[in-house]
Length: 80
Image 1 (cartoon, rainbow, N blue to C red):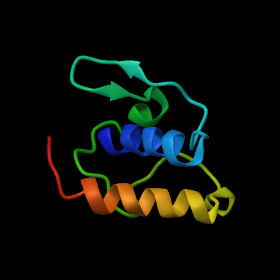
Image 2 (cartoon, helix red, strand yellow):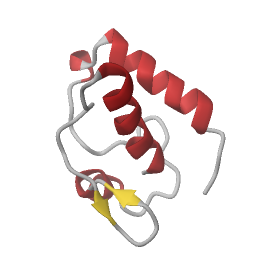
Image 3 (cartoon, one colour):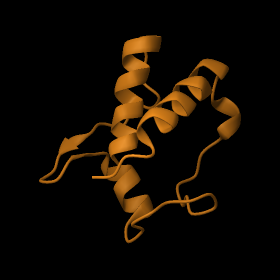
Image 4 (tube, rainbow, N blue to C red):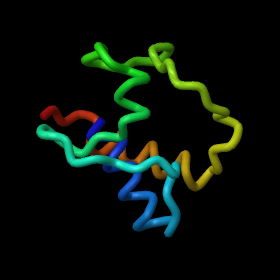
């Protein structure tokens, strides 16, 4: 969830637009996008094929894909 939040922030800063329109809420452990939370509830680690939310990856622009890769590269190895 933290990578989703950081990705959203990075997109807002670098592209001046959000990845998605859903809001985040201030939950006790971190900012949470409820839609993402409920789509992945019970999964401590989300891997390829685990995503249960529907979506069209064809709608992701090259700039957005670059943002996601950057966030995962820089922050994906961190825990907590």
